[in-house]
Length: 265
Image (cartoon, rainbow, N blue to C red):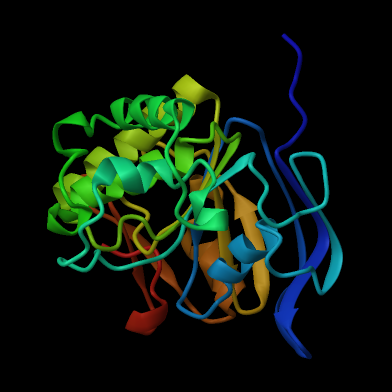
């Protein structure tokens, strides 16, 4: 079986805004078809990493290859779900039309829907099991239903790489589990490479291959067993940190202020 080249490769990568460096000296390689969780404290640079991969923020230093080329804006091979709260309840656009915007409307504005666009939206809606409510106004749907349609929109163009910024933050525990399982199923079916920013790693632990931990101006990568340990987080934060597990295998971090405790229960 022929090995695929890595989906993302960073070498001595740094990111920042003007003279301010958010993090630096990042070296990592994301295997094609893998599932990676991006963890770290608020303001640590997780979203900055996603913006750099998307080509929205040029590297401050070092090298970055995304799907074999330098990052560029509007890459159709990348699907993206930005961080957001729930939709305005008054938003009247149908779920189906919202998904259709993922073909090219999110780049160029509202468009006239052709047969090919409608067909692509139908396929994407079915892939996330959203047919039963796709014709309802998206503002009237539940958080879990909205998240499925956001996922359908990100996938409608058949990307190879899927980036998600805290897609679980507005969901209850049950819907978190359902959405993560759906993402895993879609990853396998479509041979996607997935990077997902999360505050709580626990819903992801049965599914992820690697963790990218962004904190204290650094980016550390490894398996969950390598990164989410007392020794590793103590080294990352340069302060004593203890990682505990309960009888269900959930992990909890002790020793950090609440706003930087990731992952948490």
